[in-house]
Length: 213
Image (cartoon, rainbow, N blue to C red; front, side, top):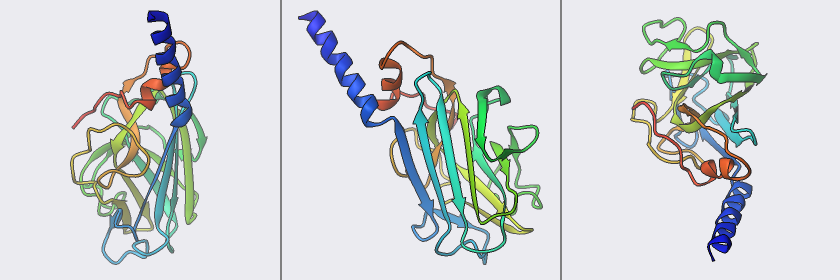
């Protein structure tokens, strides 16, 4: 009976992995998920941040983000929040986008030229754009997904961010969609891979560590 129960448990875990290896979601201005500097041309229909977080078979995660803005100016940079212990060593590969020098770094609202309208400081990784209205970044990390924030700049005085930026990040398991105006970002905790499907099933069942706030 014990062996049968164990086989059933493994089967259930494997099924969970197949069912939910990737979490997707989006925030949009039209859906009240994005706000920003008053009067910005980006605060209009067509401004959307989309994301997908995929659990890889080796205990790492691929993070994909695409920011599309409604009108000029073009995207200058896209900033994704990470936890305070996140270092450059936790970025295993950059698949799309240009990572700025000396990342991660503190994004500071006191530096208005670099971050117009930024509500508060955050530890984050910044990707620089080559002037476009749709910018995609993608990278691999050994940090698990949790709920956090983003910020993006365009031109001299245009900035946007998620509507939940000034609220506490939810301490909830990753899921599809957004949660309380937040998106999925890399956490403090490193997942230790275990053999077979059980490693990915940890993500599938939402058994992830909470983080800094």
